[in-house]
Length: 110
Image: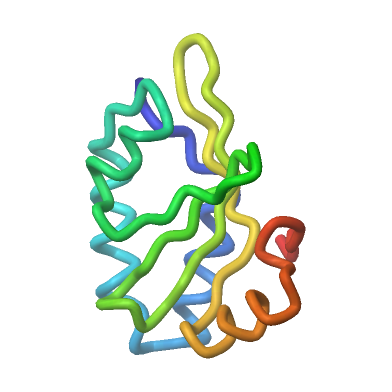
């Protein structure tokens, strides 16, 4: 199923404020446009470094730009497409702070 990216504007805004992220997020967006996902494990077929969160959470952590950036998204598989919601974007160091506060399951900045 095709991926319907919700809040793609969030990624564009992040890239505008973080010039070094332009190419990595452009590559990420290209992969998402061509993705064909039917179950959560398909996400890992497209993005090998992606981490599906446990505890029944419908969230995935994407490593972007050689692990320089992290993005937390929530997914919902529908009948005809996968909805992918951008919940948070930041550097790897900023993500580590979220993990320390155990917020990766609940953060929803956008």
